[in-house]
Length: 125
Length: 107
Image (tube, rainbow over all chains, first blue to last red; front, side, top):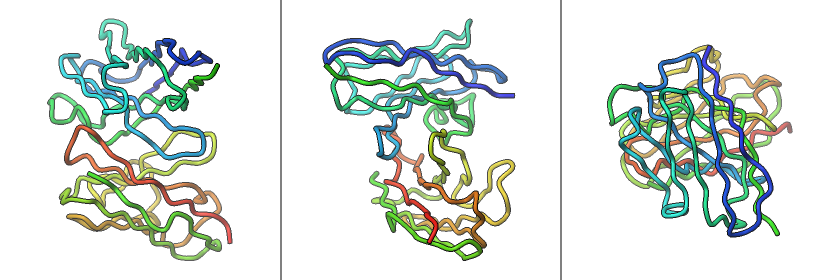
């Protein structure tokens, strides 16, 4: 059974940093692109960042480029999102999501067949 | 690619047929997925490839369209179907883009 479990959310002041983690199980982690999608309170879904199976290809939304860094540890089956210089508008539930196909860079960002339960990040003074 | 969903809210009675629309700002072939999200839950994949139901999705859900115009149809709305529905394109990225969502509420 595929499982994605996020952790690391919390309350942080503007300008602060936070690292999110997503522990994956139930599939061959290194084969699939992994992504972060966020949802501000009462709002829709916004794709944030994605990474290829090997970790070589990384992609970012313009709203987070230069502030967030996505990475993965395929030996531990963990996806990360390092978030620096956080702003109030980064307040959201952050979901990790698995690309539905793998083994090819063209599937790094695809549709998502599994999502974690989300972790809440609140940026406020 | 900007994804636009309509309407924003749909008030429906159980048993009714529901049609949700999603429009892409440029041609995306059939690279479109639909998700359902209930309050306090993560999104769940319903449809991919514009018309293929994901594993375990009931047959009352169907998707159609290609190019720039897409629809999600629920043939007979059940109580568990009241939720927010999002479309997402995966043809041209980055970025991946989602529509703003359609909330299906009880009339």
